[in-house]
Length: 440
Length: 182
Image 1 (cartoon, each protein chain N blue to C red):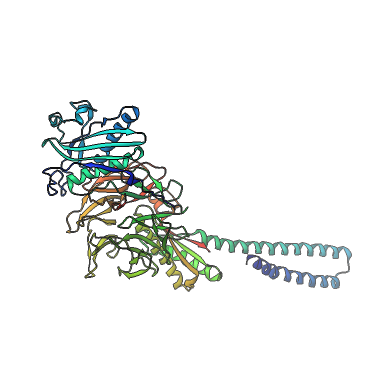
Image 2: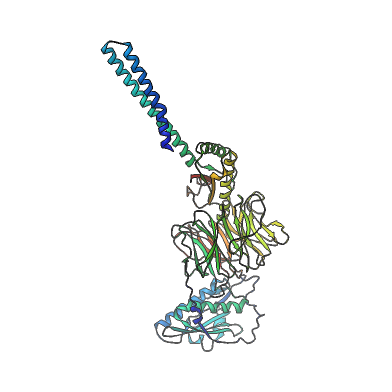
């Protein structure tokens, strides 16, 4: 595996910044983080203005404004207004000089993003602004300069500013999703960007490869592969061609990185019984975490690292349990149904998403750590499995057979806005959302 | 191994046959003086010899077949499980007893026990369940006197179904332990 991630990113220069008067960081009253999807905020994104002339500028203005609209819509926070409903031309000077806010409030837009695009040779200069139309206020304004092919990064960076201004959270625009795909005839691990863009094959094991897990810094990926004929655990650095292997007798599976540490939990069965262990990032056993005859598998850490949720068959059927690492106490979390597996602890720490089987089909549920719920998020559409939270806790990525072969889907953490992320050859399973990438 | 058996069998059946021939020949010389009778007897003897030889070959073939069949059974006869269970049912135990017998008769063979699941459960859990199934089967064989060092386990979870169907018959076939010779 070789990944040349040259940091062309730094060529994107932010030229200017408009301070937002009267906008305090405490005033994130646009999107209520505790109920972010209760009401989608109506937003208008007219086509960006062509500052330079020519076909290339016109094309880029349109594609960049579409991309910005799609990227913001992906979060589930906004309702993008149809450009046909605009009172002004979809691409208009008014977007840039002095905005007539009444034109926007009268069609229901509460937020407005305008932009201007200037192309000189292979360089693009793009100015982007977010307005509160009812207050008639500029919330954020930025001008970026970069290469034309970096437009996607520029748009995403501005979207990050928009989300930060509205929620106080940095969002998910610099995250990726790892998943398993059978496109080559074997299960191999792939990585795509958060919105399904640019999928690429990471492993070339020519054998069964499963269960990717990101380290907190996004630098390491652990996974299970039959590369040497049996299920061993591979710990791979994503930037450099180095790593470690745990190849004990039996299974070496379900890695889960400890938050912000070079340590991970995994299921090993060298004792003839699948148990969960804590390992160093180099694959050495630190200690055993579960003690129970029978299956213990699929660990997931609480964000503070103080507790571990996992699947155990100790009461006769697979159920999810939580172990408090300090007291050593284990309590059962799921009581509905006879087959609850694949726990994924939410980044805010208050919930666990999992797959529950009823009538032979798996669906995704969310249960509160305080025993609230569970709430079923997917219904009556094939098998829905392997939930994984976005690092801001607002979205869940999962695998579903609702359209036939298994594919990757995304929904909000409340189960709304379910949509397919991408289509590739073969079947796609086991998506895992990355943490925010520091260097992206 | 098989070649050796063949040779031993051949010796068991063919050598007594030869001895029998020799003794009969001697008797024949003593008894009858009639040339035609003698010729008749000799023809009869040759016929008997030929039959004996053929019987020996046939018996050796049957024996060989039985050996091959026992081996095929060991390789092809899977044991099956209930959903989400690694418990060995009565019929699975009977099959395992036959497998133990075969392993005892073939002390140089090392075997791998593969644990498999149907695809209704979830993948990670099924990898653990497949491992439990393989180690249940291994423990049973070890209890019947097979050295643990001759048996390896591997779980394939739900990755290698024998029947891709989505019905109880297919799922039942896929919930299995399969045996291979290393």
